Amino acid sequence: MKDGCTITRMANYHVVLHKSEEGFSVSCPGLPGCWSQGATEEEALANIRIAIREYVEVAEELASSEEGRIVDVAVA
Image (tube, rainbow, N blue to C red):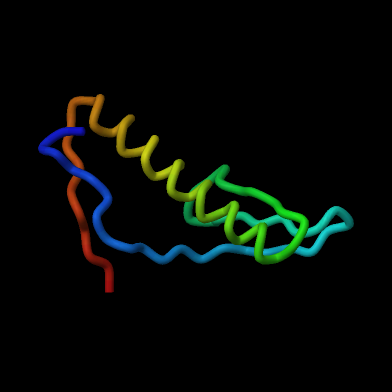
């Protein structure tokens, strides 16, 4: 990653949890295409945490491979 940029702080993401016939599905509306599932609510939430972490890591890798730089922007 450019300039040694890494994820060093905790971030919170809103997720949507749905009960299904197979258990629970969960998605992260702020990260299009980021979803997971689990047999229990706890398992689904643990799985989406992993999916979000991997999604952000890949997004940062892709951003750093382009002509540009990663900049933090605060939103109130």
